[in-house]
Amino acid sequence: MIKTQRDKVLEWLRNYGELTTREAVLELNIMSLPKRIEELRKDGHAIRTEYKTSASGKRYGVYSLITE
Image (cartoon, rainbow, N blue to C red; front, side, top):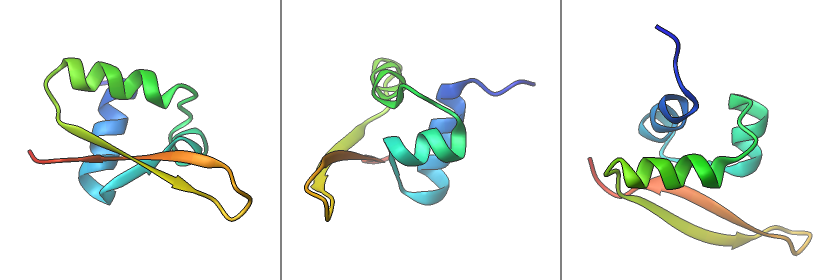
């Protein structure tokens, strides 16, 4: 069975706890993580977005499951 991008994101969140857009691109080859997160939320998954700032001053989102 071929895993969808949503499947990959959900599996990552369950196994590692959180995911950033950079990790999604580098590890999962997913270019539009916010869109996949939106789809997962519509499917009923409770996903938190926490915003952090990198050392260079860039703001980025960190996604994690609230509960399952």
